[in-house]
Image (cartoon, rainbow, N blue to C red; front, side):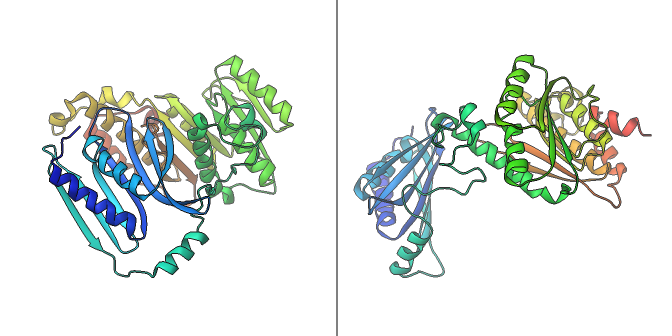
Length: 400
């Protein structure tokens, strides 16, 4: 918490007063000034019961809370939060943008910049109605809010009338984000034959059921999906739900992907949050199967942390948390490069927002023809780090 002088508070209040009067679009407060779980706040105009109000969306921990205010209440609310809860603000109206920074000593810096073109108020109002400024507007998700999906109801994400359970909204967003990745690779799935998809470490299988529902029920693709996990009770429950919904081409088995021999060929392999080198064994199996698509969200990348040695980097690697994070990033980057050496086009994408989990990187690999990436560059990086990751040993050394 930072104590602001009266003059500084008046400057901030004047800025927010102008913001709320001059065709406001949004303001975001960030940069925690305190030690509580108040991470970020976003305020925007909404139409509620035919009246313009200002809705604050408070991000606290893993939850979001909303409240509506009139202009005077919103101004007091924003002014109070600066310094006490947040050190930064970004405001945008139709005519200008502004940023506010509060220093540790309570001094403020306000930068205000006009936009190139100021639109007429009538145009702004019309666009607001067209874009759904209404308080209850829906976001465009692949699985729609308000439309009950049986497996989401049974898994506690939705109510029977299709409303999202507040405490499970992050899971709903995660499922839809995952389906967006699936949507991108649809051209790689052959409609003329049955595609086999294997989900390793499926757990409660939110995403496995979502894949089946999206591909088979909504899109009509001929697919067979297999879920693997080591927990027998979870597998039994998932099989029971699959029978209940009539998902004939969805089955779950107890087992490990490294020893699974139930199929000869797999078209897509999904591995989410497999711990440490379990991800490497899953990726190796996917490559051996010749999988057209691999979707992997790694977890707990410990191996490289114990291997990395580099005299040049030693001054920064001596800090434990820095070493741990660098090792995790290097691990996934090396995995991506190894897959490229095996003939895949690879992207590393953000799965969900960092505010929900730091384990949010997804490796998406799509098999392609043509020349593979040069292994010499990969080897140079490994030599530099003095490292030999499991996936390299499984795919590179064994093929030499």
